[in-house]
Length: 322
Image (cartoon, rainbow, N blue to C red; front, side, top):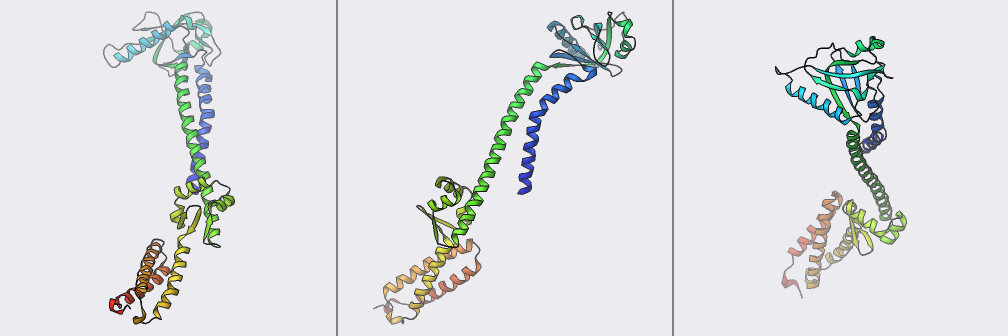
């Protein structure tokens, strides 16, 4: 039980850390990697056949839509005889990333199919940057990935909110359950102490001992099976212990039965006969309780008395009554 609670606590802490640092970390990674550095909330990352990457900022919606349309068309024809290379064009300008250049966002365009002018790889442009600056250069790409931070951010935000709500509810339920377990333990200890002194305790007195309202105590006694676990009998504002009640009843029956056995058969009355039946019923009720609580000693004690009463009843006939 302790191990499971520890796991829940660690999991809750992990979720909270994810909520606090997950989204900022995502933003940091997707914005600050040197070779894919960008400025806009909507960008694409192209990869050439050398495996190098370059971010393409898309300030203009028409440029963004053109890139997406061409890439979608290329992927649809991929693996067929219609498959053709895709080129990204742009005016090379200086930029503070690992390649020291980017395509001027307003000049970006794309085309599918073979072109007349020579194309370059990202590293070729970087290695001869002075010559390529201010020139409109094509790069043949192997793949392109699109990022829409506005949409992605909204999706992540929604997921973040949902996970936050679920985590808060789960953690609140866990804390509530933990508080209930603590209260249950307090009430159980108070009842066990009370059991050692009187045969019963009032809800008012128990409420003072555990510092809880009567309704809270009644709820926990019912919900946590304390009534069955401790063998409680609740009457109005009184809490009694069944084993004490039955033990007292057995002692009283034992005392009265001892007096009955001293009376001769011809002195027995119908009242005696009725009383013996009552004793037998009460003992059978107590026996059922102690069988459920696995109290072997009490079971044997009661069974012996039931046997004595049964034999006595069988030995009496109506002719014996005066």
